[in-house]
Length: 451
Image (cartoon, rainbow, N blue to C red):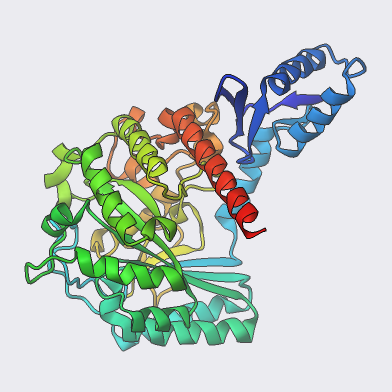
């Protein structure tokens, strides 16, 4: 007998419709009032273990609900199934994820940076160590995914090219898939580099903008004191034609809706609203080095509220909304046995926030992995299925207990550990649904014009 999922969310969207969302499948549906009343009727019938009196329309809706995992067989344990999938992801050795920082040097002097004045650059010995590390695992790999990180990774373009070419050769020899992405400040993302990167399977790049030009150039100046905003936008215009391009906006309490609107206007003037996805990041004092910014940072609950307002601005400005409540097996690579951050010295850590921090390493790329090292286990062992509040939470599939580093290392308060979906799911779903409807209407209009 079918049973409603514990991860169902229904909310009124308009006078005539409801939004339906299932956190386990990620399915989003628009239901008419009649659909919703039919759903309620189906649930009541199923409580009495009687499907015989359902109408043909009810049975058709029930099939659709089953497909979206809004319903499941009554002998099916959703939580146990999710936990099993999480275990598979945690201990999978066929997918290898590497975050590689070829240098910690940077051409910017951001006021909140946690890597001030680092100049480390990867040596040939470390490059060889990374290659050997992958070679030892290549025969059992289905995929290798690399994220180029820093510092500013484009200051070490030669190292990126050397390693990428080897990874591509190994992927052909051992028949695994190889893809890469990059986190860059965007200033050095010239046409030539973009073309070279795309040839090396770098599929996407994320660039940070700290507000419109007048604030960005203060918060993220070049080392020589000059601004970087206009050059970054010039670079994004071309990069977005060759690869996926995303813009992260680091948000703290100094931002206002007027300031975000000003940034969006500048992006739209370059037609970037059609080309890039915008992501609002919660600025946090993730290390002791950047503790000086703590007072200006939002907590999780307050950030969830302001995040909703900023995504509404995206909707009003005609931007794509790419933040979707998607189910996940684990929160991040720190909870997977086959994911590592490699710094220029070849030191391995389990979290992006720990790159270059010798106290957080679990060893070196040249040595065997010590799976019992304290710096490995203390993040890996964070398991939302062993935390009562997480087990019972209706958004567990799209949160997975939140960031383990915030929970274990940063010591964030209990009510601030959840992802923002916990606090703003309803208004965000409304914004996302409106964005999808607008996109459909625009596509239909274009089709009519073409015909």
